[in-house]
Amino acid sequence: MTNSSICEIDGVKGNLYYRGYPIKQLAAKSSFLETVFLLIWGELPTQKELTEFEKEVQMHRRLSFRVRDMMKCFPASGHPMDALQSSAASLGLFYSRRVIDDPKYVYNAVIRLIAKIPTMVAGFQLIRKGHDPIQPRDDLSYSSNFLYMLTEREQDPLAARVFDKCLILHAEHSLNASTFSARVTASTLTDPYAVIASAVGTLAGPLHGGANEDVIAMLEEIGSPENAGAFLDDALTQKKKIMGFGHREYKVKDPRAEILQELAEELFARFGKDKMYDIAKSLESEAISRLGPKGIYPNVDFYSGLVYKKLGIPKDLFTPIFAISRVGGWLAHWREQLGANRIYRPSQIYTGSKNRDWLPLENR
Ligand code: COA
Image 1 (cartoon, rainbow, N blue to C red):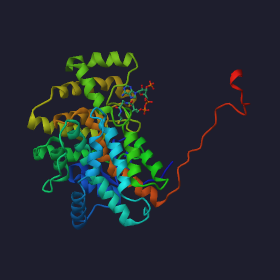
Image 2 (image 1 turned 135 degrees about the vertical axis):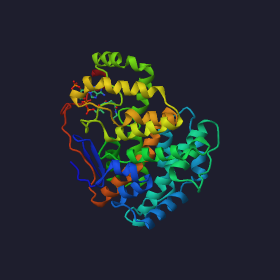
Image 3 (image 1 turned 60 degrees about the horizontal axis):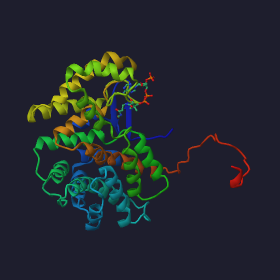
Image 4 (image 1 turned 90 degrees about the vertical axis):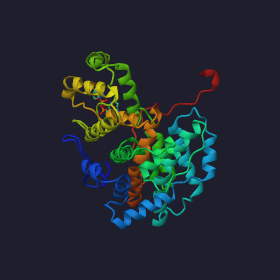
């Protein structure tokens, strides 16, 4: 059991709070960078603090040519999460870890990580397509700039606004596996780049960050809204998990799924519908009678893939985008861990053989 004042989940009522602020208010009124500031420093920034924070992040978005050249040596067939983990870890080579108790070092590390992780994700996407990464644009906001660096063209402001809200929704979720990993790594007092790299590696697993990719594959397999009921019956008979459903904490629909569904609808109204959305809605309504009694409802991953797909983002970038957002939460936990640090050392119960005599090879 760990104390934390960063995030509260009410899984029975379906509420989520960052530093006491309801996620619905933050998604409606805040920006991703403002939310990150709140998560990391505990209070909403003043206008002056926010302007300075945004400016600092903007100034540190570029990557050293050494990091870019290193990324060019990665295999184009490699998973973007592996590329991100390696690139994030490499920052530790550039910025010394010996001053970890210096607030200035902490501030700079926060700025660098928030600023550079999106550039790394977009950079690897272009590199694996055989293009050179493009430089960030100072006239664009955090999210507009990311979409620009990723797609090599400026996107509609609605796309950038929706994307920014997606980042807010994924920024923090208490002690999930990757955040736990971040805290364990932080507790050794290693550098923050290693903290983030370890969290990225943990997020990469399909039981954690990868489920929204699987949702799209599942919807493709279902093929049409009429097939949703039969698909569910068949999958549940075979004891298969329905991707994008269920959560250890929520026993009702995940509040983030509600907001993401609204965002998906906004995008469809403007840019045209995706037929997968009708399949998703049909699946959700068919699932109510079958899974609802067990407290299993859509989670954050159910509609996020549809939003990203509409924004033209390739499926294997869904999890790296999750990482761009969650770095805010991981850094908040890094700071909190440093504030009252004790190295993690879970106790174990030994279940192996005891006190055996070594045998020579010929006797085994
Ligand atoms: N589809 C069908 N049944 C599900 C289910 C799902 N998505 N999620 C949970 N269940 C069922 C389990 O089969 C189990 O049933 P049983 O008690 O009859 O055996 C019961 O609910 C408890 O499941 P369990 O896996 O122990 O719950 P958990 O809290 O450990 O799991 C998840 C949480 C998220 C890992 C799980 O719901 C899941 O695998 N969901 C699909 C993957 C996903 O969307 N992940 C993203 C999470 S944000």
